[in-house]
Length: 213
Image: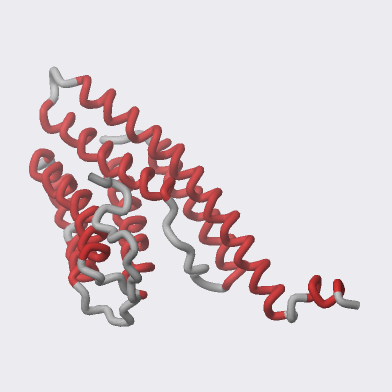
C-alpha cells in the first residue's frame, strides 16, 4: 500500500476542481478548527486527551489527501489550503509545546526560521504565493513531525517510566526538522527556477531570439 500519494489512480487524468466545497477541503478546515481544542487541553494539562486530538489531526492530513486522489476531488483551493493549514497547525503546536515546557526552544526555531525565510523569499519574488507543488521531502517531513509530536505529548501523559517515548519522539522530531530545512531549501530553489522561467516568458524568451540573429 502506498503511503506517499496514497489513493492515486494510475493512468488516470485528474481534473482540477475550482470550488471550495469538496470533502477533502472540509476535512482540512475541521482539522485546523480542532487546533484550539488541542491548545486548550494542553493548557489544562489534559495530556492524554490532547494526544488523541493531535493524533487525529495528523491522521486526517493523510485522509484528506487520499480522498482527493481516490475520488477525483483535487481542487485549486485544496492545493494551497492543505499545506497552509498544516504549516499553521504545526507552528501553533510547536509554540504551545514550548510555552508549556513540553518541548525545547530548538524545535520552535527549527520550524519558524526556515518558514520565515521561505515566506520572505517568495514574497520578494512573487509578491504572493509561488503555487509550488508539495515535494516528497515535504510530505516525509510533515509525517515525521506529525508522528513525533503526539509521542512527546504521550510521554508527558504517561510519565514517569516511559522515557523511551521521549527518546523516540526527539529522534523523529530531529529528523523532521532536518527534513523541514531541506524542504524549504528545495522550495526556494523551485521558486527561483519558476521566477526565472516567468521572466524569460515575459521577455519573449530573449536567449532564443538571440540564437536566431
